[in-house]
Image (tube, rainbow, N blue to C red):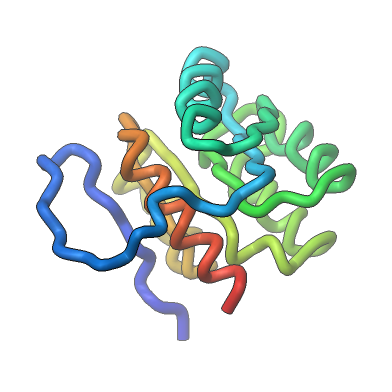
Length: 151
């Protein structure tokens, strides 16, 4: 039985959360960012690099598969709707070639409420953020994805 996906509403104001977790600086060396929106990908790459990530970008799932085959990644941030190979097909390709990476995905989408997207995210127990994405939310979700991958 698939669990409900973890959604983060990036449109609501942030809530204060009391925590003793000081893991704001994640021990991440390599991050793959797969998104066809080149301006968004470049902005996210710069912001994530400012948070000590080494970011490789790919414009679609086909390029993403090539990157996954050539490098090891600590986490993958993947857009859902892309030409060439969409996020769901990219995930399935990674699942066949490097299944250990599947728990390390964070999906981003501007298509919240799309039945195909929602069904897929639920079926893979995925982490998802809705565009526009705030960098602090993305960094937190990446941290969650990494923890899931270590479990």
